[in-house]
Length: 99
Image (tube, rainbow, N blue to C red):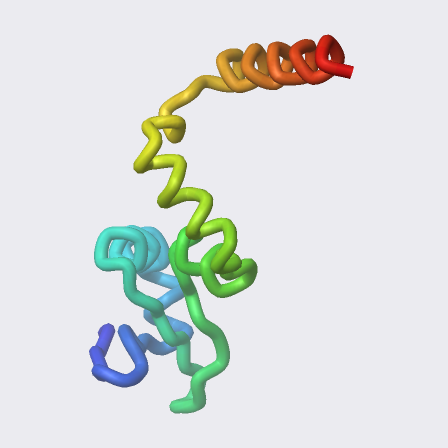
């Protein structure tokens, strides 16, 4: 049976985690919370959603966050890869013409 603690997220025994892994995985994803897996009362592992793991493993540098905000403000966050490539080619061509 899963128990919840405010400071530790969802806490389950290793046996419960093994037998209910699919439903626990869905819960972690849906609720965006961590899952602590205990064995004999000792926390042994943590299950995180992929977005939470990425945020912890590679936090977004401040400069990238600011660039993202500016891109949204300018409406360029919705450009396709093809559109971006075209803009780069045009910019390079214009730069070459100026030299």
